[in-house]
Image (cartoon, rainbow over all chains, first blue to last red; front, side, top):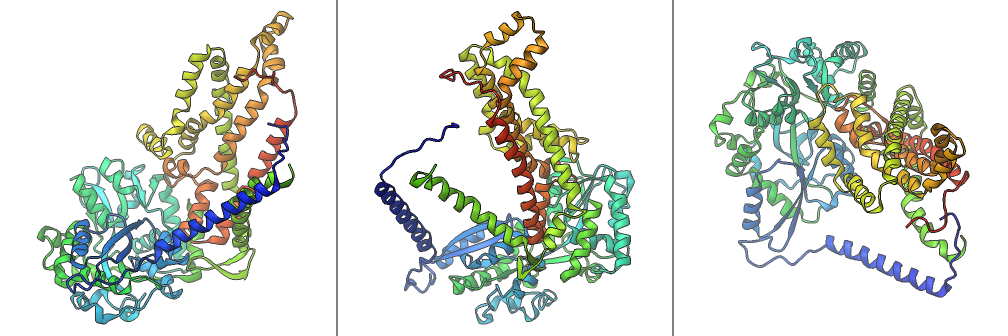
Length: 369
Length: 264
């Protein structure tokens, strides 16, 4: 293999092969491109206005009742192509690289700020969204999208602590339990500086969005002392760790901890009465979406009280749809871990976009990890 | 090689290596956009971060880990290869198939298997990560070593012993020099991917073992700090090119155990 072999091949044959290769590449590219604009003429049947069209949806995994997609297909005649993403960054990167391959996306409140700022979202046509009247005003006009020009809330939730009730004190009721040396080796934290720093600031009774150096120094001291107690920094495995019993105290998203409780009854959900971080995911339409009318129809379909209630029963996150909430499974509706009482909710805060100050939080995180 | 015959590798090199590398290099020299992606203006901040006091210990840890994994694979793999090389051909074939079997199963599947197998005290530690990496990379060491050992005529070693060499001398002066190219190939096949390993430190390390691979993914995907992540990827590339060049030089010279046609 070390001896270079010179192969003498007729130049014209090589050229012919290259031409063939180039031609097939062009054909391949054309094939891929052609796939994207399969706009078919709308069917004349008025009961199935979108027959033949394809709606491309990009959402978090396990975040919709799959029966609803079938129902939407049956009602409109459209086909739904449903893809999943696993992180804010995955969605944002896809949108930056040219998001027009999707018609409806479900960004988190944290992602909304950059998406709006970069002009990647198309303004909504409210006349096509009569279902918006069902939404709780508390979740409208959010700081990341004043006047709901680009987005409609889908679900919301809090950051909570899941604990094993047979291992952890009965009276544990706030974030302090995360820093208790008694649970050394069985504590898991989100692997995310923004959320973790916010939670520590809350537990210290400091402003949750503070980037003041003296506040962050206190946070750093707490996290540094906590590090030897931590079993894992993870944003996805905490649910399985709660179910397996490896984690006794886990910081995570309320809905995931509730899903863990379904599988292991000893799991208890703590939403601190002093308030937590609140978040919301939205529905939005990317600029350049191929089927904007169909996208609006899909969003309005999900806003229907009946549909939204069934969806909420399935995903177990709280719904921002006031009309739907009355129809949600009573056990779910009355669970304070799902819908925190009004006074607790009033004390919950939204994570704000910190701009360039985020590097302070990142530096802190690097120093403790 | 010259002339048209060099075109296919040239096209491959340009399309799949040079163009992406140049893109990464250009990202690394731009300013960070805090809402994701990069800004148009030039900046060396990414390189400053990638060669700064945060990244350098992580680079050191990654290289030390990759070195330890390579050493462990060599120490485990060499005796195995020597023993296997002396087996009759049919049995040897069966062993090779069995030993390469991990390579045809999904790496993720094997990692989840290890997650269930490892005690809690080893998960989230550098030791645990190193153990799983050594197990995962062992076939890459074993197969080239086995190939090298097969090619050594057993009579050569016997002749050395007959001529008064101690077993250690026979190994040190005869067997090892003849199998060294295989060992070098195995070491580079293990060390190079191990230095940039992401999956095993991510899952077995449980967010507590930061190596270069996890750092780059984290900075790119979670922090959206593209210039830093790109600069760190370039640092990794440079750090990897050096041992690769060394190993190519090393395997190019030295005794060649290649009696014509002996390899099947």
